[in-house]
Structures are given as C-alpha cells and as structure tokens.
Length: 419
Image 1 (cartoon, rainbow, N blue to C red):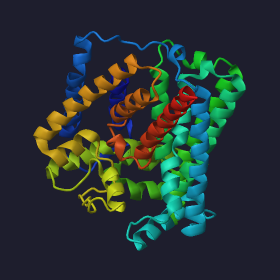
Image 2 (cartoon, rainbow, N blue to C red):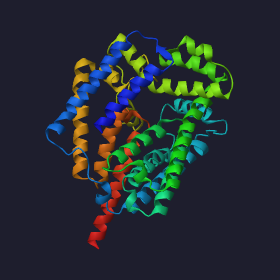
Image 3 (tube, rainbow, N blue to C red):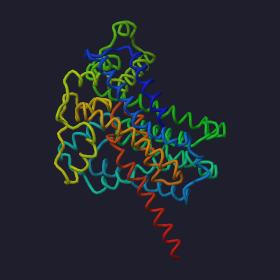
Image 4 (tube, one colour):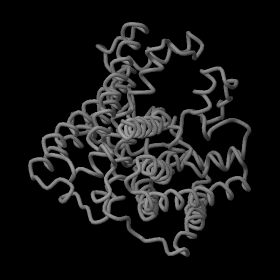
C-alpha cells in the first residue's frame, strides 16, 4: 500500500517534468514542496504500524475467502446490471439524452438538463441506478482477489461482464473516472494478496492476452473521450489541445508546437499529451492555490455534500473557488480548505487511517467490509496527486455496494443458521 503511494507520486512528478508544457503559475517549486511534505506527513502517520511490527504482507486471500464467494459475485453483478438498466432508462427515456451524437454531446446535454431542474433528482430510477450500478466494482475485486477459488468458466465470464458494465456505465456518464477508479481498486485487490503476480493471477496465456486487450480497449476509450470533446468544439485536435491547456493552467512548450502537424499520428500524439496534461495539471493548480492562499469554498468532500444536498439534508455547498473544475491535488485542496494547520493534521490522519485499514484487513482478510475499508484508503493514497478519491462521482456508491453485498451475505448466513 504505502510503497505504491510513494511510487505513484514519483511517477506523477516525473510525468509532469516530461510533459511538453509548463505552468502558467510561478509557484511550481512551492507546489512541489507542499506535495513532498504531504507525502512525508502521510508516511509519518503510517509509521506507527511499522513500530508495532505489523506483518509487511498479508496472508494469501485465497486461503481465507469470504463465505459464499460465488454468490457474492453473482449478487454484485445482478445488482449492477439492474442499476445500469435503471440509469439507461432514466437518461434516455426520462431525461431524453441522445447518445447517438457521441458521449461529449450527451454529457453536455445531461449537464444542461441537470441545471434546468435545479440540480434535483431526475427520477426514482436515477436513485436506484446510482445506488446499485457500482456493484461491478465489488465483483471485480472479488474475482481478482479470490479467483483461484472459482471455476475458470465462471471467472472468465465474470471478468467479461465486469468489463461490459464498466464500459456501459462510463459511456452513460460520458467520462473517464470509472476506468481510473476500477483500475485503482483492482490494483489494490491484486497487491493485497501476498505472492500473486500477474502471471499467477491469470495462469492461462489466452486469459492474460484477453485481459491486456480489455485494458488496451479501456485506455483507447479514454483517448476517445478526449477526441469526442475536441470534435464537439468544432476544431481539430491540435487546436483543441492548445486552447484547452491554458484552462488547465498550462501552456504548450514552443518546441512541441513547431513539430506538430496534421494526420492520425499527430492526432494520437496530441491526445496523449492532453491525457498526460489532464493527469498532471494538478501541480499547476496547486501552484495557483499557493499564490492565492487558503479560501472559504468547498473542495474536499464536495461530492458527498452535493449528494446530501440533493436529498435535502443540508444546503448546497459553495464550490465556486477560483479554479473550479480542475484537479487541485489532495495536499493543495487540504491547504486551501483547512489552512496550514489543517493540512498538517489531516495529512498525518490519512496515513494513520491507512495503517488502521491495513491492520484490519490483515486481521480479517476474508471480510468484504475489511477489504472495502482497505481499498478505500488505498484509493485515497493512490489518487491523492489528483484529488480526494471520495470526490469521484462513483465513489460513495462503490462503498455502498460493498456494504450492501456484505449485509446481504450476512443476512443470508443468519437465515441458513436459523433453519
């Protein structure tokens, strides 16, 4: 867990340095220092588990599989399928969203429709859809973590259905966050199991090739979304990149502009630069936050607060900060919303909670709830260069899916015991 946290930050900084673009803000050095301090504070909060001599690796999950493993996967996929159908019906039949013109146009129509109804809930099908559709995350984690306990046909069909549900839900949302979040959850599930490698996880050469093909398809989908959004503006991809990067707080380096041309090859290169800029622009956003100082708007936990607002529990949070819509990176978001002292305390707390999640998982490796807590903190660490993982649109519903499946299995086991 913690090693991946360190490596993801190293990769992020290396990617930002490699990017053929520079920040529009001058405080990039201070932003890097802030992020480095965040990493050190998280390590400090996590260090108590090393002092307590908690085992460095978990026992093999395959030896401690959850009860009714296959049933849990089936329940997850059934719920996810029902929820996905509910979302399809809500968006197409009730909201009237037309996906035939591409995901970018559909996403914009969906956004406008939400603004017109004042941000309220569109229908009961929307509620059911979002509550249930993320069940494929649970299935993906269980298939990866405990796959050796399953029959191969069931494992292969499960992976294929997870992929189909992932892509359908991504298209319906018109975004890329589901692909990233599923990747992080699956990576967390794989690394949580001691002694498993990619080859041992997928022993069949055909299955390994199929999984790599699905991963390549997912990455192609991410680039497709970028190209769709460029096409929706009515300008070519090269011009779109040059116009969009300043929004991200970046400007293209002169040498890259000079070698840019037309054609499929240059379009792919520009899309890759755009994707890399999208992932790493949070360093520039952090520099902007440092230059402007802390504020009184909401960045952290914005999505959960918006959900509570739609349910009428609280008032609508004010998220109109000066770089709204950009990734701030978690350390910069903490600094903006909670000040220097809050940044210091919460950074240590994140490391502390991550260590607790790891210890609970090591103690109860067959518990779906323990796995979900571990993966929640794992995703917070891994996605911290971008934002707080909990603020991803699907995240609260993913955690709900884990608890829902765990409760249903618990209830089912209690009924069996009473009979």
